[in-house]
View (cartoon, helix red, strand yellow):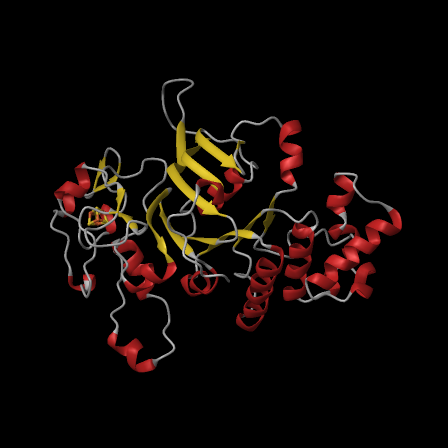
Length: 366
Ligand code: SF4
């Protein structure tokens, strides 16, 4: 995919802008006060931009909020707070009627190609759904358009009348891509589109997405937990942890100089093709589990697991800022960013176990 520089572009280059986005889900709580509820803080104060024609990779562990963020952007979930601007228009609270024409321009591709296709419907009818829903083509015209889409994604148009079960996993994901392309959307959100596929098939789908981006001028938000996949497809990468973006950078800068200890730990787990290089590298094992998003830790949300944590990290939340000497477009939310050549697998947190706030109001070991 195109790797043009993404800095210093005019504002018109920005297709999607997310500002201070918040998404909370109410959950049943054991509280004694009637009407009081707990909330899962799935996305907390997230801001990002996606420029036209680029791919923004969004990575993080399962449950970090990346898919929720994507669904908020696609307006599949209402947001709790913040603002979403798409193609210059504030879409945060658009009514379903006013959102309808924009639905053509923002499409999603999902992780499980089989789960997202109705097994009882023929593929031609599934891919043709958008034309029916928006009443833009019918009969022979619709069939012609669907077959053109099938060709575009490398499917045999003669298989128009087959059922999803008659296709392989990779072909089923191509069906999902074809359906997303029906109206030539401006933005496609790919939510773990290759995670359920074999490695060899993954490469085919990634190459297809890359070719389509080049030929159709598409813009992608690409969500994955596999960093090697994200590296292959993205211009810029944002790393999420417990509902927050903790680091964002052009892809090469992130790989060469991860600044957030969490990013460093994720990268240390990526398999290297060179066995000598792989042997030299220390894998960073993080302590503990991801804390509850209902009562996230105080200060830096990563502090209960961070090998570099210090008292400041418990009390003060770090902001996304560039480390002194780094490019301005490489930002990390860390009071003590990882230095070049630093091996954080040797670091030990300088806060006592009983000072670590596992959840707001809950001290480790208390
Ligand atoms: Fe670790 Fe502190 Fe940086 Fe958070 S702010 S990532 S706890 S060093």
